[in-house]
Image (tube, rainbow, N blue to C red):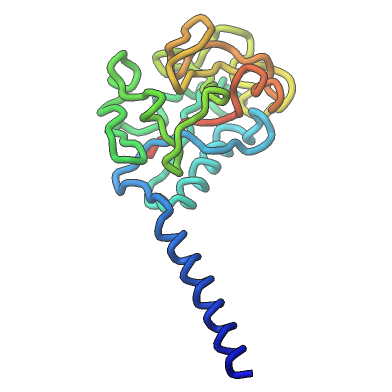
Length: 216
């Protein structure tokens, strides 16, 4: 019985050690991380419950990654409503600078972010987990023009203010700066989606992902 007890205890210790080692080996974001691409969407296509709901999603992912010290906002534009004026993505993300998971600078200001010399590339636009976005998910929701203002390329470019998972369309950016559309190399304004559902967004190589910026 004693031998069996010792064996069981050894198994428990080994299991705990494996778990601890796995936790310690999980990559941690740089202390300076102030930008990431969401590793997953909310699961309802482009319906995030509005811009505020998208902010909550960014905050939840950042918190899980160990970056809760910042106030995180989604890079989204939205049309005016009865109780809210037009939302321009560039006005809600702070003043910079912004750094990715590895601590590499993405842009030092709003102007640089929306210029040709920003640091957003396939290899630098990392998720909150430090992973890259696969080409089959490269369309990122923005609803924006290249200058960060609300896109007016169509009657609806924000899936009804990010509340629709069916009707409407969304302006998308290419996180890898490559693909089709009117502006294929644009990180924030490449082309419109086919629709707002998860299946429609996936059909055009997206997954309802967002850009998140520390706004403080």
